[in-house]
Image 1: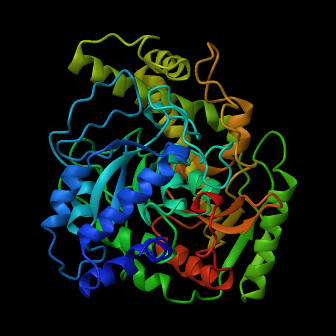
Image 2: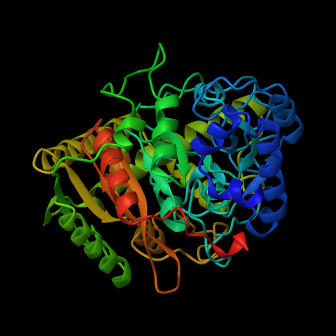
Length: 476
């Protein structure tokens, strides 16, 4: 059963459960066994609640839900599960159990998922690599000397290692798409407000943050979004309604699309040549599939916008830490916070209300510029990352001068924060591999609210360049 478990996606596992060929309890034990076997090398799982999961699996009754009995991992950022702590991977956050499920976790459970552990993340989900002092670094199943990305790095490492087919993730500046590209996975950042942040939040960082999953197949990503999307009364705004299930979209060939592509860096040094060449290959593949492909990109200067993005990012962190201080009475300082986090917190504390509102206005102006570009083109293709996967330890979060504007971080993260700013959906697909055998992800962005076209094209590309059978060395 072990090899079969690893080779099947979540929907296939749920089908076996609903046919009575395997039980939820048996699937859970497979996942736990793989976690115990493969996690020591990866450090992807950081908190286990196996007994609670075993009770849920023992009482599970199949009812034709999309993910009936499928094991799931929750991220240690926003992945609130009643009775289980969420620590944001920080020594500053006490190990208090959550008093209730988040709306997303409630919907995961309603879809049939059984959560059994939390995954590693950087402190407060800030940088695009996963090396918190609290838990230690997570490692990439394709090369243990490299990062699985961040902030959903533990989730990506676990899915790529075959521990689970799907894992919870979230994205405030590339935190789903970057780990997907690092680990050879499908990583969709949905449209802003597609998944609710209820009950604790309305939005976060003025809409930069969105929830979803990482998966090995397009259809698992689509079915998971079908299971979780939709507003909750009290949400500050809602995403445009979908026209039909995303799972159907993933199985539907796209129309002839107008696709722009670019290998250019928005600022600074160019994209690594091997990654740029892969993007050109992807453009050629799209043309061979009948799409209209041209080399274009929006005329924007991200370096002019970056300070305003950081104003909102830093303010959001400061608000989070102030809320924790109010609950615990503990003063934030170097004994509890990493230097990179503390530096950003101090920046956020200094932001005035006027500066914050100006930053929101600037980002909204940029969003209108980008939206105009997508009136001409259906999709924009770029590399997901500007450089190969960073080596573990390449950036020291404990350095007194550590900050998110480090040139290595900016080159690595590439264009990903743009789509958090605009709220558009964007998906990273593992189309290629480097000469060293590492995954190379390609990023596709669509107009606001149009996940349907992304899923249609992703399904077409998954057939043209199948990646499900690729296995990292940690599989053995």
